[in-house]
Length: 285
Image (cartoon, rainbow, N blue to C red; front, side, top):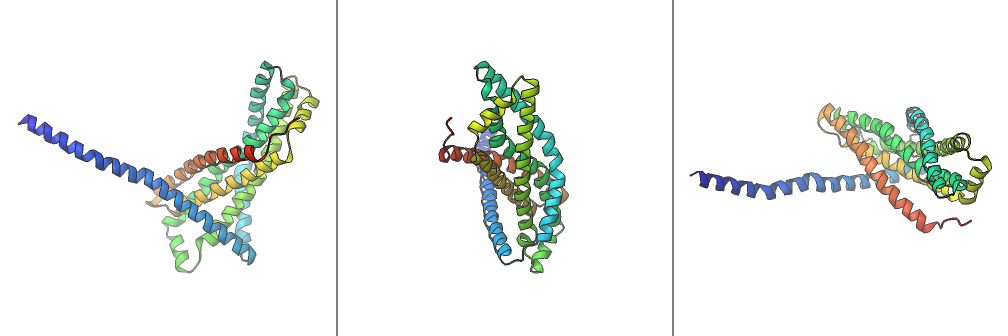
C-alpha cells in the first residue's frame, strides 16, 4: 500500500513539473517581452505626440519647465557628489597602470577620455534613474491607483500628451546638461588630483588629452546622455501607468522602473560604444 502511494505521489509531482515550468516561463520570460514591447510602443507614440505638439505649438511648456526645475533640484547635488570621486578614481587607476608600463605622460588622455566617453553619461543616467525615474514612477503610479489617469481619458485628455511628453523632454534636457556638468567636473578633478597628488605636470596632462581627444568624443557623450534620459523617462512612465494593487503596487512599480532602467542603460551603452568604435576611427597621433 505504501509503495503504491509513493508511486502515485511521484507521478503527481512529475505531471506538475511541466506545468510549473510553463507557468514560470509565461510569468517571467514572456512577461518581460510583453513589457519591453509595451515600452517600445510608448517610446514611438510619445515621440510622435511630442513632435506634433511642438510643431502645432500646443506643447505644455509650463509643465515642461516645472519638470526641468524639479529634476534639476533633485539630481544636481547628488551628481556633483558622484562626479568628484569618479574623476579621482579614474585618475588613480589610470596613473597606476600607466606607471607600470612607463606611460605616465599619457594619463591625462586616458583619464579625460574615460570620464567623458563612459563615466559622465553612465553616472548621469544612473542618478537620473534612481532619483528622477523613481519620482516619475511614483507620481504616475499614485495617479493611476487613484483613477486620475482613467478620469483624464474619460474627459478626452491624452495622458501621453499632458503628462508623459513634457517629462520625456525634460529628462532628456536635464540629462544633456548634467552630462556636460559631469564631464567638466570629472576632468577638472582628475587634473587636480594628478597634478597635486600624483606628481604629474599640467602641460603633460592637458597636452596628451588634447592630442587624443576630439569634439566627437564630447558629442558622443552628450548624445548618449540624451538617449539614456529618454530611456529612463519612458521606462518610468510605463511602469507608473501600469501600476496595480494599491500603495504596494506603487512601491513595486518604482522598484521595477529603477531596475529595468539600469539594465537597459548598460545594454544600450554597450551597443552605442561598439557603434562609436566602428563608425569613428581612433585618433592617431
